[in-house]
Amino acid sequence: MNEKRQFVAKTLHGLEGILASELKAIGAENVEKQRRMVNFTGTTEMLYRANFQVRTATRILLPIYNFKARNEEELYGIAKKFDWTSIMDLSHKFAVDATVNSSVFTHSHYIALKLKDAIADHFRDRFGKRPFVDPKNPHIQIQIHISDQDCTILLDSSGESLHKRGYRLHQDVAPINEVLAAGLILLSGWDGTTPFIDPMCGSGTLLIEAALIAKGMAPGIFRKHFAFENWLNFEKETFEKVFNDESYERDIDPIILGGDISGRAIEIAQSNLKDAGIQKLIQVKKQSIFDFFPPEGPGTVITNPPYGERLKKDQITVFYKQLGDTFKQRYQGYNIWVLSGNSEALKNFGLHASNPTTLFNGPIECKYQSYSIYSGSKKAKYKEG
Image 1 (tube, rainbow, N blue to C red):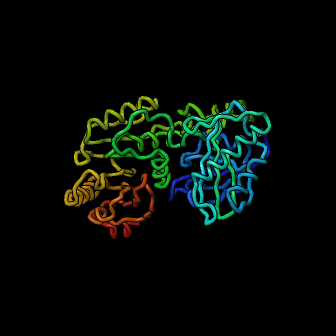
Image 2 (cartoon, rainbow, N blue to C red):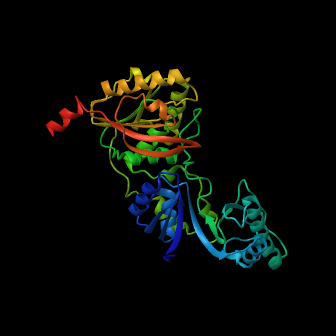
Image 3 (cartoon, one colour):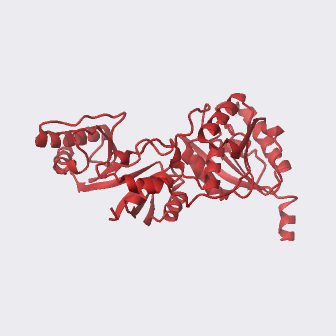
């Protein structure tokens, strides 16, 4: 089906620009950034490609119905008239989520309930039977977004959030989300040709995402399933074409190194690398960052050091100062990127930060910023230039 439609790609705060660039790179049209999402147009193939190839989207939605409603009963009546048999049949289990920003509609859970009733009653009136609701494992996932009186019903084409790549079967205490990890790497501009290091790697998510980016491997390659595979109009051949497209892959052998002081974290990282089938691309070992010596620069470090949940205040101050000193002394020619939820601790880093971005690691507001480590002073660097 070559008809072009509008889609919505959801993402994390601060990654909208990166997601827009990713969508343009795979051929999406009319790419437009919004808050925590990007609108774009494309064919069915583009919908499948966005799910399969884009690294910084959490889900891809297809708007199917726009209307205005002044109250819950009007919403129910209008939604019930929509031809739901064009979307699903009686054998499909379905689920509904609501996102509401309105003075008229104030309760998202109640809105979701009204839309569920409208869909179920549409089928009951036509066939004398209702399809089952299954919030945990639905075939068809439906969302309704309401802004004031404007209602949009959307089909969720992804199913489980796209950050659940399928390679991370084991995780450390506070793992970084895969979409955020990919976003951090893409924001840094690392291209796979210089060493990439995470000296506090935890369960290895940043390292794995770096390997996938360097090799041009699609993040969807490990996924067992996407929700669009349950749709009535699923095009198997089109999806197989996307799945088997290796034109984005690169023949490159990146240097990707990780270390962590926790033996347990390293065991988990090694297990995840093995599950992803990329253990040959990445070296990890149990090692404190203070015992870690990087290869000669240039290179990129991206790391998410502990920022207070596990360390006391005075410990964190000392730790960040030692961290800054270590980077200054050993990482000449490197760009150091640090994600931290402790802005006070970052003040003790002793290095000049640039490119600050506000991101969220789960519910924690974080600063993500870079530090360029020059050999000698910055002044001398400019004189040479």
